[in-house]
Length: 129
Image 1: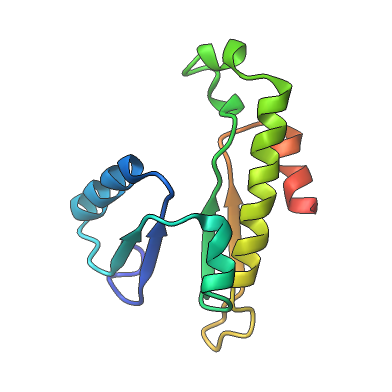
Image 2: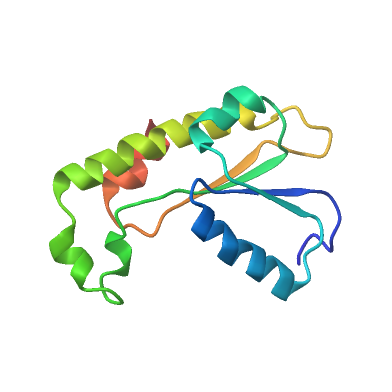
């Protein structure tokens, strides 16, 4: 909505079932300038090097930040789970950096990294990587 249907939004997710919800939300919001795709984000950097002015990387995570809404997360997640997520997040972050065009004439080179985790391993340590 903020883009007022100008420019192009590429909404990528590895899981097809999540893209169904994305498409529904785009329609509900009246967004007409978005393309959805189902692709491994770790490979996007090589496929689309320097292609994006801005990137929002909403990385898959352990979900430790939503324990108040879903208490089962507390007992289902282990430290190895968090470390696996952090490794994947680092791979996605490196790919996103490769896809980002820091020399864009449109004032590009901005990335927002987000997770729903409160774990340092999935936030500060990933960004510092």
